Length: 595
Image 1: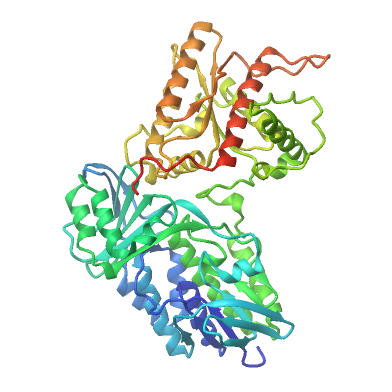
Image 2: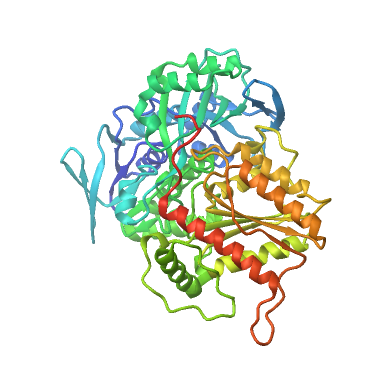
């Protein structure tokens, strides 16, 4: 960097303040623009991974030591207690993981430490101010602020969170979406709970507790709710309503929340917009939650943001030209992290785009055919035979702009079993009609025997539930073991009880049922059981259920479809039709969860 440049940083969170520290220490004039009137006033606990600790050490001579003093270093062999709502211990899960050692700290404490470092390094901080818009020029960026002032700078760093104004301006159409739950968090030292990690769950609420140093416990309640309900309550009312929702829970857990003052409570809706397809646009760069929101793992994203701040500062110091410096930073980030894309992240929110490229033109044609037929008759159209030529594309209705997401679940542990092959065949037919699909073979659902509260501690179970949460339709394929469904499939479906979203269980989802076996009597009883389970989890089993002994054979020379294909096609047409209807109408009314 040949001359002293000026950089505006939108957002005074961890990523923004770390960027301010790193740039200011390299001789850059930095102005941080933060919407809050006070930095570090509130914040949930997070687990800082080793990359975050290394970044803290590199950012400042004393920063790493201070962060360790403020946090709680997870000891070797430390475990998390998994409890039910009544306080019964269900399991003890190791907390170390493959990237140990890790440090538990409140986001607010980390922000305050970074704020002190940034001010010491010479950065300026504007509070109670937001970036309203920006205009990029060949030689700089003009930033318009909420107080009517204008800043002229060489570069703009957008670290203004998941609802980033800069990201929406830079990447239109990437606004954050609600994830189906609110978050209420707080911190207190007044608790009889042991100073160790805890997690407990009940209907509609998941409570996590972390020790964060200084004898404090930080807690976060994840609450199934429609958007906007809990933030509108404010801290005091949210605390009171949460305590009421936890009636009958283990008293020390309830007291933990009761003993937290409203001034130490934060309330927010969980939102996510997926990783940005690109981070740099000329002289503007995205960082932190604005680039890759923290829904899957807040601690890991915070650590990455701190490491990105260092890499960005190094790039700016190494290049005379700001656009070249930002381009170099983007290349370095991709090499260091593997450039996440929406398809590599856990699907915390519905991702309707996956698989649509693979479906290609066939999906677009089928979208038009199905939506046109439903609009005309209101009944499910039969799926065309795969060898039949689809109709020419017709204009899409708004409801057909995205296909439904269909989850298919097999019930046999044997890889390559008939169940797996039938499920894969059905998935291909759904994809040909424009749906996104996810197939769980039997080996993919070999979960521990169901107990309430186990889901958060087993990633494979969490992935299964995330897919079901996003599903518009479900197809269950079970072998006819002793005249009923396989225990493997039944155990996986028991985990539906842990779905924590506004729509309980599988409410509003179409469920297609397939029994695989040679004996007619066993197939009939298995289908009846599958339909009973579908009703029990509040789904809508399709009128047509199918019993097959093998996947459909290829069509005959004259194009005649085998009978198994005709039955499966009819069932799939009903699943897709009901799934499209669900997409068009939105989720059913809010029932049964905590309001």
